[in-house]
Structures are given as C-alpha cells and as structure tokens.
Image (cartoon, rainbow, N blue to C red; front, side, top):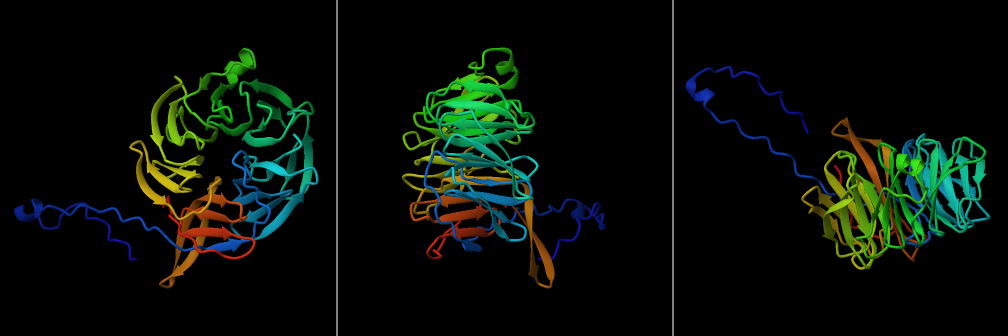
Amino acid sequence: NKPKDPAQLLPTDHSASSLHQQQPKSVKPRRHIPQTSERTLDAPDIVDDFYLNLLDWGSANVLAIALGHTVYLWDASSGFTYELVTIEKGPVTSINWAPDGRHVAVGLNNSEVQLWDSASNRQLRTLKGCHQSRVGSLAWNNHILTTGGMDGQIVNNDVRIRSHVVETYSGHTQEVCGLKWSGSGQQLASGGNDNVVHIWDRSVASSNSTTQWLHRLEEHTSTVKALAWCPFQANLLATGGGGGDRTIKFWNTHTGACFNSVDTGSQVCSLLWSKNERELLSSHGFAQNQLTLWKYPSMVKTAELNGHTSRVLYMAQGDGMMVRMRHVENSFKVQWRDLVGIEGCLQRRLKILTSFSSVICIDDVRVLPVLLVTPFY
C-alpha cells in the first residue's frame, strides 16, 4: 500500500467555503485475522499436565520447550532447532529464561533445579534442598530465581552465591503452579492448587515472618495457574481459575480488592497482556478449549477462536519482538510479532500462535489443519 500524503497544515484556498468545508475523519484500518499456519514442528512426549510450565520465550528471541526429559530450543530468528539437554533425573516439569536471554532454569520432577548456559550448552549449577517434590513453576527477578513446588513452598534463590536459598514463603497448602513477579520486581504473585492467590512483597516478607504475605486472595473456587501483571497500570493483576471456576479476576494489589470478575465458560490455562494495546489474551481448556482476546477494561471480546480440540495449556511472550521481512510489490514489508502460545493435548499436538499471521502446528504424526485468530496486530 502506498503511504498517504502528509496532511496540509494550512489550506491553500482561503475562501469561506474552503474554511468551512468539513474534512473527512480518518478511519482505523480493520484488523486482519489470518487463518493459515506458518510452520510445523514435531513435539513428541509433550506432557499434558495443567499444573506444569513447559514453555518460555526468552529475550534473545529463542523459544524453550520441554518434551519429556529433554529441553529443546528454537531460534525464532533463524528457524534453527537444537537440543539443549536430556536429563536422566527428569522429566522436566518447568522451564524459564533468565532476563539476559542466555541462561535458562529447568525444574525437575525430583525437586531439583538446573541452570544452563544456552550459548555454550553447559550446565552451570544444580539447586538442591529447596523442595521435597517436583518443581512446577519458576520465575526470575534479576539474579533471584523463585521456585514453586508441589510441597506448597516458594523459595527465592540467589544464583550468585553458594548458599542460594535467601527467602522462603509458606502460605499455600497444595502445589504452587503459577509464579509471576511484577514489573517493578517488588511484588510476587503465586497461584496454587489450593484455589488461593498470594501477593508477596519483598519488603514485607523481609521485615516480618516468611509466612507473612501482603494479601491472601481466596475468591477463586478452583486451581489458579494463570497470572499476568498489567504492563500499563501499576498494581493491576489478572488471574484465571481452573475448570471449577472458569473466571478471570482483576485485582488491585495495593488494597487486595477484586474489582472485576468475568466468567469465560472454560478452564483458564494462561493469560497474557498485549504490550501494544489495552488487551488481554486468555487461553482455555475444558470445555471450550478456546483462545479469547479481550478489550480492557470493558472485557468485550475482540476475537475468539473455537477451533481447538484440546486444552491450550501454555503461552509465552517474548521481550523482544521478532521481525520478518516479506517481499511485497518489489519492496520489503516489516512484520512485527511478539506473542506465542502453545496448545498441548494427549495426541501430542501443539499449536503456536503468533501475533502476526503465524501459527506453528506441532504433531508427531501429521500436520493438522488449523483455524487461528491473530490477537495483537
């Protein structure tokens, strides 16, 4: 499309008729919703477990995915895929990139956490003694790696020092399956199989007992795994409940008040805020297995996909956007994309959704047709 001519600052005709002539209003172009898949990759041994976190997109534009005992990396810029590590002590139960996009934490079923350098394919260290059972959730806050276990414990590990355990948060009575630090790094949100969300503040936890949370939020009626801090409004947290709850709730973490709750009709598996628009993307499980894009704060549905046949378990969003050059009418068109989501199911099928006409379908047997909505444009 040819760019429009710059608008004139002053009219060239100063007659009364031209001064009073009404100028047409600019119309925002209609969002294009692609329906085709872009790439297909095999993903055997993907675990269909609501409580795990097996996908993450790092700031270096590399996607990490855990398949059974093995961690694979896919460089989204080059399209190159390679194995990082196969861990005999697995299976892998969680994965999370450090902020530098080079180092990645790998949580295991045997309660240990391994730290790896993706550039050299070298293991840096193993964190032991944090938990008594599997580590299903991880979250970085600069040099602090926070781990959440099936034992209900949350542990802050300073990976720079030998005695890495620096804080322990005790509040959940069942498995911790969701962890997210706020953008400021001051508050941590945790969700568990006990239907509870805790807000932990580092200053409060340091000055008082380690069991002292800032807020204990008990309005959900099922497991809370989906957590998302709003990037454009401080102290705003979105949480999603499991199959017995099906709601997305919005919290003021300064006061602990829930100021909105929306029934989605399905198990909420994951939540992601758009970095460019005031929109929220939710992925779902039973019974509709849909992806829904919501306009915030009205929570009007902008788009919805009902073509998935299994739970959309994992989603991840990269810090840096990915650029793809496509030749259009003898010129290169730059297409930006920064969102990726994955659907996993018992047939070991995955679908990756990106924000610009990009879908990756992963099946260990065959390519399946995909009906996809592109949420963020």
